[in-house]
Image (cartoon, rainbow, N blue to C red):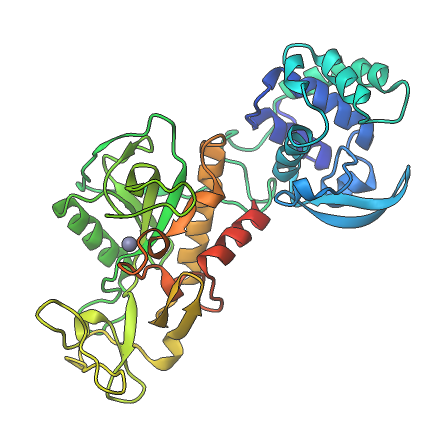
Length: 407
Ligand SMILES: [Zn+2]
């Protein structure tokens, strides 16, 4: 009989069962440690803040936890507050790896030795700490073998593990994108794009973003590109032949600001958002036009008058009202008017990041999520001021900070 997940301690066990950590043979002993520190998840720090180890706040865990003032059994101090069990598990191992515990990896196969090592480096004050933890080891081992109810382990539910929902990647029927190679080291990051394409039905009809998204996937096939694409409804499509360990072109000439490497398509997957791209105020008041409904030069550039206004080609083709668009600038954003991503689109993009962090835990990094405008500055302006949902604007730097706080 599978056991129901009833409390934070069950959540922790279930989360730890599916967590991939560098030293897997230390899973049971660290769970034993947390059983002792949190009295099997019943301490207030565990119940209120997913802090099962009584970890005090240090700068080195800022990507995983926020500081919280707390009265614990050993007095008042500033402790780590974690958002969910995943953040705690990652935060604990980061706390150990970056702390004064040099040489702990030498105990990868020696669980009691690992605890004795932590103790020798000042981890705990209790003189009987090692014996107390080791005594809980058999029970912890058993807990890790327990079967829990509720879905297959790689698809944690929103309620259990914070607010991440694995996206449903839909293969676009009959559409294959050109593969240029494989990613032997696994996926490292992501480039956020917009497709600068129509979002509505015929003329200026109601939104028909799923169909437009599929159109754009088909265009990617003709042009030899390779990417996934998110509709304004929140659906995400990938080419029928899509594999995470294969790559193709989506970013063109580009350079990663973090690693200095060029040709980032080889390292980072590309996701296009269905979106018209930069829009321009038209000579008619209250009208904003995308490039495909503006008068353009032979080279395709939108022609602007002395007041920076474009000439709308047709009132019956796609254009937007002032309340649909926003003027944006700052950070990576090329100053201009943009139609924001829909809330559903932004949520799906965020969930894809959660999925990739879980699927490629040792290679995928939030620090390697860039806008196309960050890797091809001057040449590209996506996602610019379209990023985040209609009621919020984010530079790419703010988006990365948002993701770090979330996951
Ligand atoms: Zn792009």
